[in-house]
Image 1 (tube, rainbow, N blue to C red):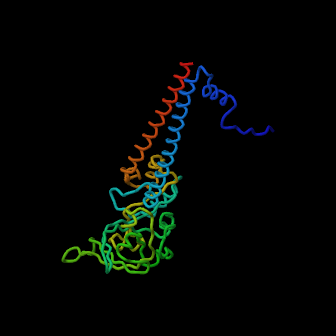
Image 2: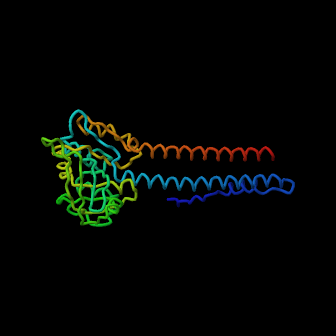
Image 3: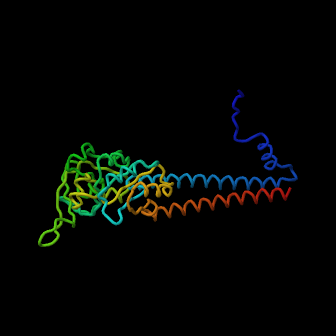
Length: 302
């Protein structure tokens, strides 16, 4: 077998060709100066483009990790009838190739209060195994633990929310929901205290300051939804290919559903990322055109 030959970044012919136009004889000194400035300008332009693209790609990855680490890449919502068969639907969706997790959730808004302060919150009921499958939560527990999350009546809250209410793991937080029990006097707010089992910190204030995770059975009872869930959060292996999963998830659901992907739920961020990519492509095109024009002008002057 022949040995593998390692290819160098530049071949001898390429060095010879570049040296031919960068070095000039005495009578062609002016051409050499033009070629040098052109080479320097192109080098700085490409270097700037590489640096900016690296920064923007890092920003995009960090932003998507924060946003998609908590919310699913695809939200499955019921149509025509409540999602009472959520267990079967979630199991079927989780078997679709490319689907990492199908987590049933119960969502609702409320008010979190303590003896020191009160704040608006977003309550999400979720199974303990699904919550532990979210790295953005499971790997960012700052206080307490998620062990036995489904067994007790403990909740997990964001770090900023805990700070604003002056609470820590082990303390009690009172959750107030406007949708409570129906009485002869009307609907009364539901008020119930819960022990804080864990405090997490994702790194985005929009999440750390409002999210409260509650065991799914407790959330169903709290929001008067004993047999159904609000939706199913679906996590995929490749969020950029979310369009290719829509048909498979719809067929696997086996019932009328409405799908909302992460691009629709975060259209502001997604549009900003698309503009950034278009600008980078435009800059790259301009650099290539400038390089081509400089090379052509140099050849004409020779």
